[in-house]
Length: 375
Image 1 (cartoon, one colour):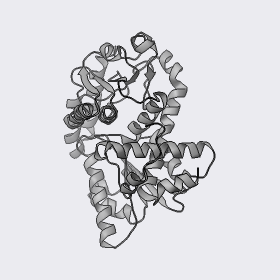
Image 2 (spheres, rainbow, N blue to C red):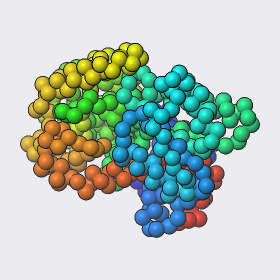
Image 3 (cartoon, rainbow, N blue to C red):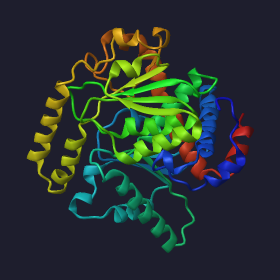
Image 4 (cartoon, helix red, strand yellow):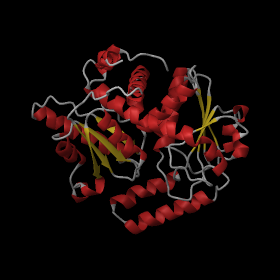
């Protein structure tokens, strides 16, 4: 997989495609996308032009805070020759009754691509994106507009595909022989900052199990994930020859691991409570839920990735991974973080190339040939 060339036949099938969850794409399609991302990264690092989509407009709609993903979207669009525009979700008319489909039509009539982050409320982000896509597609069809306006999921309640695909690229760069048989721990970790979404661990267990990895998910009681991603993880592991299991012991997950990904997320029952509070626009209740979630987290302060736990991993030298920002002194010790700073930055930069690849495969005709010409 790491040295594979983009498959022209598969890339032709990805024309016009949106990425809403990695589970929507086949494994060969994911591999073709990764091959494009690697090729574009090589070109970019060599100083070659990657302006495959000049003079196009790339909107990104954010309903949640972001630094890395906003930067990745803007950098990706600019490197492709596009003009990036970041739209604050609070500035839309959604809160005034405009439907997601109507929002899609309004943005789709002007944009050439659209990224969306809508991740805080279970049951809402992914469905919002699918409704936006429907609005865009209906508008383009009704007006006989031949443009392709793909949607890129920049994080929803179910998945964070640009992040997990970046993680996959980083893992396969480090493990050049592939992920088959590699032991990867995806673990909850303590955070005092806020009740984080479930989508990163859900996306990781869905994606990494596709490639033969032995994935262990660890979390305290009460921090379960959604049923559908877990079912996909089990199915993917069976199909790939890998494995997937869960444990309530962080130590057990770390034992013999080749890579560890300790990250906080909110208690499942309280994340569900957010749904009703958000619908009633009850700010006081939302604040109370957040405080109760943090209090629940505080009961598990010992769930930290520290030197003792890293010593449990394969040779005591497992890859430490995180989507950033990590809560230092809570999710991870200062010492572990110091040793991983450069690698974490390299892991984070892969997201730029994932976004570039997603836009390119959806919009550039004859992409495989274009990439070869610019080699």
